[in-house]
Image (cartoon, rainbow, N blue to C red; front, side):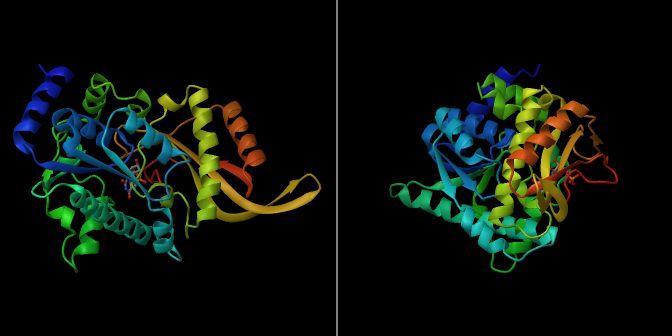
Length: 324
Ligand code: XMP
């Protein structure tokens, strides 16, 4: 019978057998899968696992600091890399969603490749990073669900100059036989923070595909504040765990409003909350009007640059979950 405890026990033994004294690098995303994969590998090989967490400037408000902190708390050997300006620089002037995804994916690969080299350089002579750890789960294996996902990006970026060095490493994927609910159960048995295990899915390109059109640091700042108010209210009202995925979207559309005696001409925030099983289809969630009213007031009163909030009442299909 499958139980989290037997899975953990046999997997740790198998990982030790496989990896032996070699070192492993792994990119953490703050999400469930990479976190559980990291903790399993950490229990198997300890400090020989090197985790890297990149701030691409497209994370949620305070997410980089909070996630880094909780990983450090778990005892993981982790390096946080602030690459915000680099991503913003690469994204300047780019408006097409698929191009944005490519640029974000390619920049991530470059940053991660450099970080992997730095890890190798700090190791004593003769000790080598030979493995790339990944949080791939069974559904990722059977169908590449995410057509827009990272592997496509890797190919399109690097088929000219050859693969980056970390992609020549052997791959170790301790979760590639598990479904998501099993990953969560394993994570709970490993003692991982329920806040990490219960997280909504968050796309790799992050807020980059929730800002329609060109991404700027200023728009990211506005969206982070609005999204933070939204998510905090979902948590406080008990709705966070009843929703499969939620987030705010920045619309680069200006509309007229009044604030005191002044006429304003500012941007719009759209709120999205969906129920789903796997993201392939999704229904918009009927959040209570009172909650929406509270969130709208808070955003408009506290987020400079926003004077209008709308709620997305479209289901998938035909509307995708993300707006880009
Ligand atoms: P859509 O917008 O296609 O999203 O209905 C379905 C699920 O996939 C996520 N998503 C992505 N995840 N890279 C990712 O890692 C991406 O480029 C990407 N695009 C969408 C989305 O958040 C939802 O959970």
